Image (tube, rainbow, N blue to C red; front, side):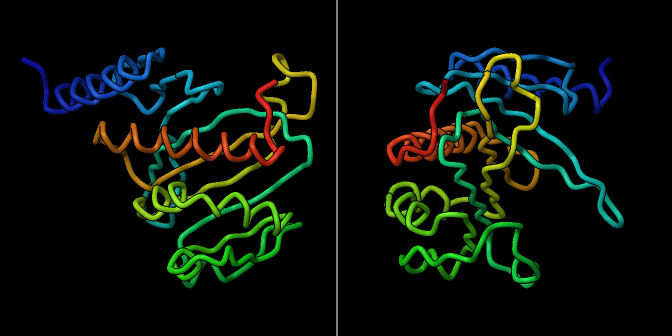
Length: 197
């Protein structure tokens, strides 16, 4: 008879398999561990869905994450997070606080970036703002991809990362996160700040 832990792992596997099938992706199955990942083609982008953890003071924090590499011709950087007392502690290197001129979005989120005009244009997309507002504790960031993707790309490559706190177990929410992610990349492409290759 399967243990409770094994049955829970099986249920997790079913969810990841289902989202992989619905998105036409590929599941790397590690028997329900957090090393499972789904790689899916969303539009022109190759997106990886996985979970990762960070050690906290008294516990481990688990995040569900989507990420994709892209060529960043103008070096655009930005970060979006929910407003809290902790978001006001510091400014990421090379970025400034930006108001995107849409309420209540500006009151809900701290937006930082390297190019205020492009960031405002990016978040001028009503649908994108609404998708972001639906997600509790979301973080969106363009960061240096380091050498993760150097085998595939010769140019300077960065990655877009969207992460939410916790293990997302709702397939509709996972699909919505994929859509939010793809829309962000498409809007960046429209602004001339992202290319797949």
